[in-house]
Amino acid sequence: MSEAQSITGDQSIARELTAFQNNILTILAKEPMYGLAIKRELEEYYGTEVNHGRLYPNLDELVELGLVEKSELDKRTNQYSLTDEGYEAVLDGIQWTLSKVVTGDDRADEISEIVDESY
Image (cartoon, rainbow, N blue to C red; front, side):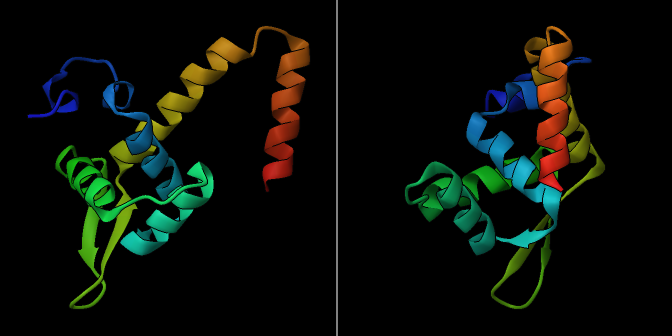
């Protein structure tokens, strides 16, 4: 059992995930993806190679935790998508971060600008 699996209670499980696992959830918030596409997104973010031995065990754990759903695209390719619980975990992380960063109107305006530029 992983550390994330041992946590219970009202606190969001996302608060116990690794940064790498939270980054996977964030990537999947955009759209369902197959493993190699997730790997590429992570490599772009980290600026370094992400090996399969790191990616797939983390994806499997997120599936076990009910945050990600795994489905078969074809005989060799799996697709991963966020569950409702996974999406709630992403939102919980954003809300917590904003509660620490936004300390006044100036910072709120900066965040609004970032959101406006993102889409």
